[in-house]
Length: 269
Length: 210
Image: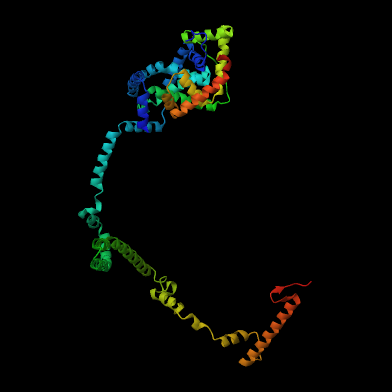
């Protein structure tokens, strides 16, 4: 490489010198003993919990095809066995049949309450299916859904019935236990409240019908302000006009004093 | 992206490198299976090269030893995550380079250099030193020491990334593609960094380039 004395030395040649910089043999002995100690410490070191997680992920990533296939099979199996639910015919009826007796009674009474509603829905469904001649399948489907809704309505109705029954029976028990406290003048009877409420409530009326005629209203407003001897209506009205004119005169006088006229206003000091 | 990388690797990797990578992978599998002692073979095989990179990046012998050891320990600790998508040597280099870069960024203001001696059993370096000594007419040992210091100063004036590229390409002999993999950047970036770094080094070492 350097045989030719005329050959120019390049930057690459100088950098080659860096390759020749090497530590002595003793250095490597020390290096080896140190790295062995560090390696041992790393083996003995308690690993953090996420290291185990990352190991699991690494294994899963390495064997992702068999893991993925197993997961797909497991999901399919779970879907077939557990997600069938409401589409199976016997499944919906089972909870009602196996429920305790009071609940079953409540559901039965709720079903009786909800029966007219269900009947109305059925009528709606029939009407809808009768009306829907052109987009028949869609409308018929909606109507059938409406007709199938009663289980929800039944349960809601059952809740309401049970609650109101409970309140009524508690009230009866209370009255039986302490008749003194349950007197009508302490709590009032069931009907008293409605009667008192009805007496307070005003029947709806036309708003303009309650407005007084203008003359009567004016007289009513002026009576307390005027002298007590003016008794007749005409005298009252005349006195009012005189007073009004006097107040207008006072206003114009004050406007002249401040120089206000027409569209301008000026102050004189 | 992975496919592109794999194609690039296939085109660039030489048959020797491929054989080497396969041999390394077999040892890695042994370590992954629980044979801890097998990792010693990898340490002995790569310790000089890893130390050379770290030393030329830091210009400090003690720091270089610590960082090289840490790189091997990190590789040992996380070898179960190594899946062979790149060669073991590229992976190990990446660990070493990243550790060194973070060390240099943390200790940016601290600059304490300790130089190794040039071993003149390498014929190429001996001839080079002979030629330079003849041209300058200086004493051999003093000249070599001075040249080492100047080289070190010039390397330290480069940015960390430029220094890393020069070290990996000119001193360790990695290809552009391998450097791009180790530094996680494009081959174009490696080329431009190398070109810029050489220009700076040329300007710094002009008196020796005659």
